[in-house]
Amino acid sequence: MIDDRPHVFGFWDHLLGVYTPAEGTAADRDPQPLAMVFLTPGMLHHVGPFGLHVEVGRALAEEGIASFRFCLSGIGESFGVGDAHCSTARAVIETRQAMDFLEREYGIERFLLFGLCSGADDSVNTALADTRVVGLSLLDACSFPTWQFLVRRWGIHQPRKLWQRLAHPLRERDRLERTTDWPTTLIGGDDIREFPPQQQAEAEIQQLVDRGVELLFLYTGGLPKSFNHERQFYEMFPRLEDRGRVRVEHYPDFDHTLRLIEDRQAIVAAVAKWVAQRADPRWTDPRWTAEESLAGS
Image (cartoon, rainbow, N blue to C red; front, side):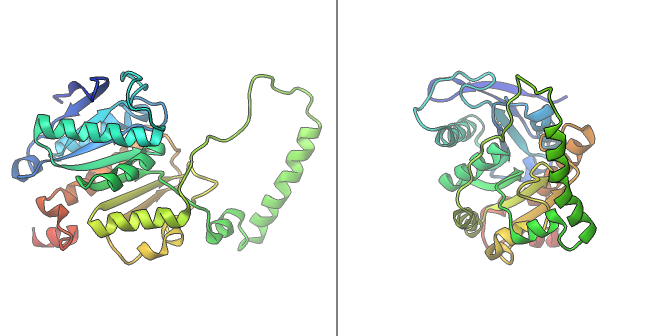
């Protein structure tokens, strides 16, 4: 049985979170307890899209890692009160309040952060602001189109695919010209999500790597306009390629919110494996790597 424990915390007792304690193994041997904190994307509450945060948290509990999922203020079960900052700054403040609470209540001093979409962005910002963060697991984090991305997307190296791409807008225009039954309630457009400039994003990730933070970047097929290959991460950030501490995995057939059970199971397994390999008291030592630990075990 999973012993989920609800808590109210925050400067004004306005935030609601659920703590899932660890079960043996790593928790027994680790003198400095480690916990993963889940940051919610968009307006979703603490369970995450289709219960993703619950599934990851329970998988981690079996590996001996505690977790904490909570609702940001004004979302889900947390009250809409707090600091008068922009949403990104407020997310950092409230995540640090969550870590403060876990340190007081459970003696946890090292933290992993998990975030999808805007939650990934908030995770990076929190890690930059707080050295207690020793690892990030980011799903569909920031991405920037590269010239190699455009080659793959447009199939320039595949003449037939390129012709199909070029012909499609012409066929679509012809269809629209013949359409008279227009929808009256739906408005087209893209969701707005602001990334820092590409060079700044690379510098921020580099800063975390230099500090010894471990990073797992998981990308789905839900970013068709900006990411389409595992190799693209190092096309975007070439200075990070030989630095270690960064793992990148691409799941092109998965959608952004992981609606299918088997897709969530694959992500849960990937995150749990990554955490289990790195759940070691020496994680914060920049001279140590997970590979050295595994080789010596």
